Every structure is written in structure tokens, then in C-alpha cells.
Length: 436
Image 1 (cartoon, one colour):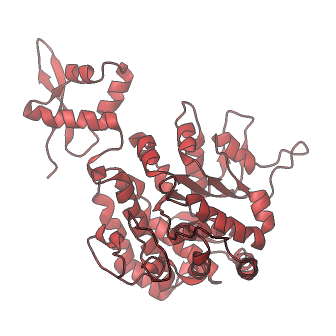
Image 2 (image 1 turned 180 degrees about the horizontal axis):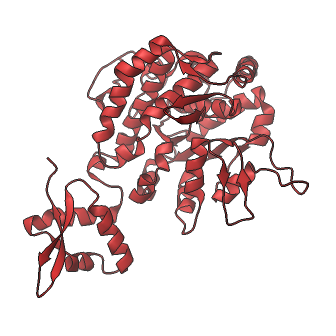
Image 3 (image 1 turned 90 degrees about the vertical axis):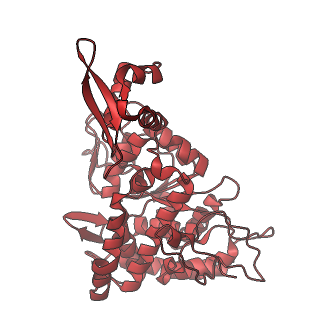
């Protein structure tokens, strides 16, 4: 019996379709899946063919292997290929957070499967351009830094694939006071030159950095804060739910011959893709984008809460992913099937976010204190919540923190601050009226 495609439910289009890499079959021992299932369209072209070839050799989730392939492939291709989206120049960079339970997610298995393949296909890239241990913005720039005359030749190859097996640690580092990590990551996703002014003018021109992070759903929910999401760091990542897709107690991995055959083809694919410049949609893909994809992705802009924040870059990500699919298929033209695959991947990312963040996510800001204040204002009714009551709710916090909290509250739909007469002076109250 085919599995139900939960991702369609997230868009109000429930359907059941055959999905060979996830459907139960007599000769495959698949564990029960607790979350969404990707549309089979995501396994498109050469990337999808590679996943299908490797799938019987690993317990990793096929979609986890796929996003690692797209991310590592885009990083290895380098900064040559690009797309114009409006006036923004987008590189072939895919960032993803693979989110799964510590034991059952098999997040590392997905990355290690791709590392093994790329170690055979592009060994220098894996040895010299794959790193982990993000700790600061300055440290990231250091890995792709410009030269400084005769003192330091700098880094000539600005490609970098960053793999963080404990992305919760990276999130904590980014929240340290004075940390530049989040800001530098946002610039890196954009493909912008990187620099800081507080350390000998450290600078990196034309970096090409992709990031894969692994994290558990519980840790992600615990560490995400509304201010960080609003700053745009996490909507640079595609959230991808992963779960062990095969029970293989005697698994020995892919045969060497399979890896060698795939690696030979991947070496050619990546070498040829590096010579590409601008990538564009072909006529059929452009029509699909105008008629279906763009209206559907922009239709979610009215959504609120963490899910909307986490998937705010769905439209540009659809084109970025389509570009990588096309490049891996030896072409600089995005065909309709490339765009449909990318669209399916973005839909799966949104379904993943909804599953990971939970059923109350749309009504939550992601910040427990802001949620607490918003609920108190609603409960206060027509009279509103006074400044004194805000103080009593958060008396262990300082005045600056409370001021910031109330400032963020009144930016939420339906919330406002008003001045009302008091004992000889006006006082501020916070009110809620449902939008519309």
C-alpha cells in the first residue's frame, strides 16, 4: 500500500501517489515513518538517479542523501554558475538542516554516503574544501580569506562545504553577545564578499560556501528564538525532516565498484558544470514558474509564526535548487522537470517545518517570553494589559529587555499600545484585537 504524501496536506492538496523509495515492499524492511514523505518528483535527473543507486546500500533517508548531494555538488561546482532573481545574483548554493531523532534520523549516514562518493570523485575537494566547527564569523572568513601581500597568500580556492554534525552547538555560538557568526552566514548564503572591521580588516572576496547542519527536532525547537528567525539566519536553510528508511543490520555500504562507477560520472559532471556562467529557465519552465510555482510560493506570505519565518525564502530557493538540478544534468537551461523537482523539495521543506515545529507553531512566535506576553494581553480583554502588569510578569528581567519585548509585541498582527488616562498622568496599556 503506498505511503500518504503528507507534504501535500500542508498545502491543502491531499493525495496518495506511488513512491518507490518509501513505499513498503516485500523484500525491504522499512521502519514506520513518523513524519512527512517527499514527493517522488524530488528525485529528478542525475541527482535522483544517484540516490536510487545508493538507496539499497544505506539506512539513510533518501531525501537526506539528496540534499547532501545538492549541497555538496553546488559547493564543488563553485561560483561560476549563477542566476539573476530580480537584481540579486544567486550562486548554486544549497544550505540545509537535516532534522531527525538522534538514533533514528540517520543524519550522519546521509552525509557520509555523499562524502564517500565525493571522496572518490573529487578527493581534493573533500580533503581541502570540506570543514566543520563553525564558531565565529571571523573563523569562517579565515577559511576563505584574501591574501595580504607577501605575508599571507590567502586562500585561492574559495569553495567550502561546511558540515556541522551538532548544529545546536553552532546555534548557541551564534547567540553569544557580540558574535558575528549569524551576520556572516547571511552574507555567505548571498554569495557576498565577507569582511569584519574589528580584526585587521579580515576580508574574503567572492566566497562560495554551502552548509549542511544536523540537529534533532527537540533541540531545534529549544534553541530557535524569534529574533534569530526574524534576522533571517534560519530561512537560509531548507529544513529537511529525515528518518531511517531501511533496517539493515548486516549493512556493509555500497560496493566499491558502484562507488567507482558513480564517481567517474560525477567527476565529469562537476568539471563541466564549473564552466557554466548564467543559468536561465527554458520556455516551458518559465511558463510553469509564472503560472503555478511563483503564485503558489507567494501565497504563503500571509502566514505567520515560525513556519513562515523558516520558509520565507521559498521562492528564491526553488530557483536555486532548480539551477543545481540542471547543472548536474549537464545543462545551463532549467527544464520543467528541474523546476518541478525543486518545487517539490521546497514543499517538503515546508511540510518538514510544520512537522518539526509542531501543530501550535503557526500560533507561536518561537520566543517563549513573547508568547507569554501575547497570551497575557489576549487574556486581559478590552481593558488591555498595563505596563505594571508587564513588569510583574517579567520582574526578573531588566527594563531594556521588557521594552524590547513590548516593542516586538506591537509588531505582531492585532497587537497595539495605547495611552490611557491614569492618576494624573497617562499610562501605557497593550491591547489585542483580532486582525480583520
